[in-house]
Image (cartoon, rainbow, N blue to C red; front, side, top):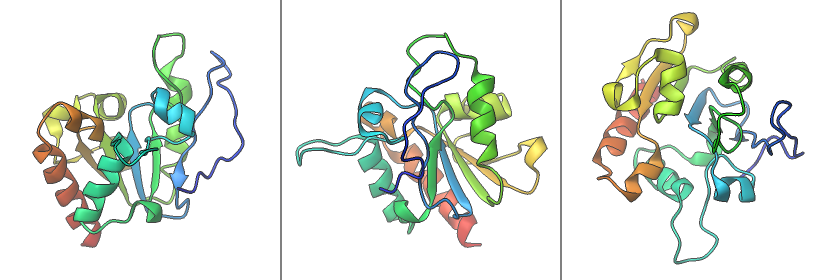
Length: 174
């Protein structure tokens, strides 16, 4: 995957390694996850991908499910609401939200994946609005959708993610 921020930087507030977006920086489509975990930080990507044939990570699930609805992961832009691991509360979301909102420019469709992505923008957890188009008042020209984080497929049925991605993909094609 093409990581558009190849140089590594650290958070100005807490010093943690920042994980930038990857994919096509010119894409009108943006996917916003929650925050990178250990595997994502190690790989330098917002979603981790398998390193061995026997592994499946959230990035693999996302890629497979996007392909099912006709979206190729390398053709879109993917990031997280928080740009570093969120294992404590030393950072203020406002710093990360500003960086994410800057990526909204020139986008037509944005998928918010997980509550850490939906709550800051719409004030609702993803499960309250999953699979639906949501309104973000300050970005009226962008079509926002909500879905579960692909990592939930480890512990819950994948149907809700599939439904949300299918509706999001149909909206993009219209």
